[in-house]
Length: 108
Image (tube, rainbow, N blue to C red):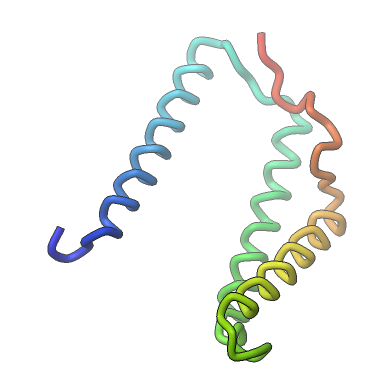
């Protein structure tokens, strides 16, 4: 705790949550309770690619957050709104429509 302090608790929680998700998903796949169809796999690849582009967008423009005003809350709010618009634009460009098809994950 002396190195990570309160961030260590957040990291441990996030890591254990992801590990729990992966183990439960593997258990469901192994027991044939869940499987992913072709459409889900194609959209997952597109979403992964969009997220990589979005990561580079955030890393590139994070230094420009303070150009809007001297108020941090306003700067972060504007940056968040612009990021949402950019992400939705990417989703539209790659023809990933959020909430358009709920049948991608087929349960038995």
